[in-house]
Length: 420
Image (cartoon, rainbow, N blue to C red; front, side):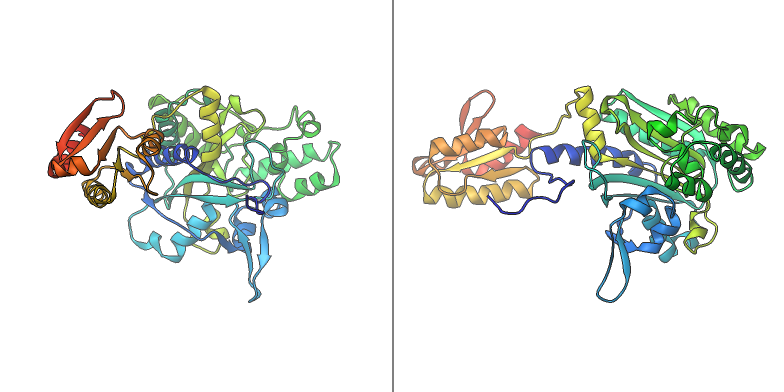
C-alpha cells in the first residue's frame, strides 16, 4: 500500500463509480450542446484579483475558502473556486464578444477548489458542469438555462429536486434596498465579522446559514418589495416562460446565492434528500461582472451544477443509471499461436467500434474466463491450437452460455451483426 493518500477533503474517481460521474457530466452537457453552447476550458488557476473583483471580497469564498499562493516570479494566483469569472475572462481575452454573434454561449466541465470543512457533499475539490450566455439581456436566456438544467436532471431520472427563484434587482433599485436592509441589520445582535459584512455587502448576511443569525432575520425587508418596474417586468417574463415550458419552481424572496456578481434573476436547484448540503446547482444573471474585471458592458447569465452532489441526489432517490459495460467482447487465447491470432482480432474489433479486451498475462482457461465474466462482456472468443487448425474460434454467449464455432476470418463480421 502506498504511503501517500489523497489530500483531506478530496476524493479519487475510480472504476466502476467513475462511470456514473462521466454519465452525469454527459447528461448535463447534452442539452447544452443541443442548444448552441460551445465547449470552453480554462486554466485551473487564475490571478487572485479576478476572483476578488468578480466573486466579491466580502464573500466567504474569497475571505476564507480560496487557495491562494505566490509563484516564484511573484505572481499572486488562486486555484479557481468557481467557473464563471474564468470563462468570462477567457471570452474577453479572445474577443469572442466582438464576433457579432451575441450571446456567446459556452459550456464547461472541470474541477474547482475551496478550503472548507470537509463533509458529505462538501469537498475541497469538487466537479461542476457549467454554462454561460454572454452579451445579451433577455429574459428568454435566463429561462432557457433554467429549462436546460431541469431537462438535464430529469434525463438522469431525478424527480425530487426543487427550483428556487428570485430577483436581486439591478443598479437602479438594489441600492435603495441595500440601505433599508442595512438599517434593519444594524439593529440586530451580530458578531463583529457579520457587522463588517453588513457594511460591505448586507445581502451576504441573508445567506448566512447559522441559526443564531437566521432567527433574527424574521421581518427583514425583502428585495421583491423594492424592485423597480423594469426588474419586476423582467422577472415576471422569466417566470412566465419557465411556467409555459412546464417547469415548476418556487419563489424564494431570501435567495441571494453566495457570489457578489449576481443581478436580477437568481436561482438554485435543491434536493431535500441531501441534508444540510441540499443545493445541487444554481446560477443567475450577472450583468455587471464584465465591467468589474475590466471589460465592456456585457449582460450575461449562467449556472453551474455540481456533479458530486448530483450523484448523491441520484443515490438518495435510488436511481441507478443504465451504464453500458466498458467491454463487449473478451478474447481468451490458449497457446502462443492463439495469442497472436486473437490479439490481431481484438485490434480489428476495436477498429470497427466494438469494445474488446484481451486476457493478458498468460492465464489458464479458468482464470481467463473469470476475467471475462468480471469485464461484463457479452461475448467471449476462445481459441486453442485445435480450433485454429480447423480455421475457427469458439464464440461464447456469456448470458446464455451457448457456444458456437465461427470462422477466424468471419468473427469480426459475426460480432458486428450480433452487437448491432
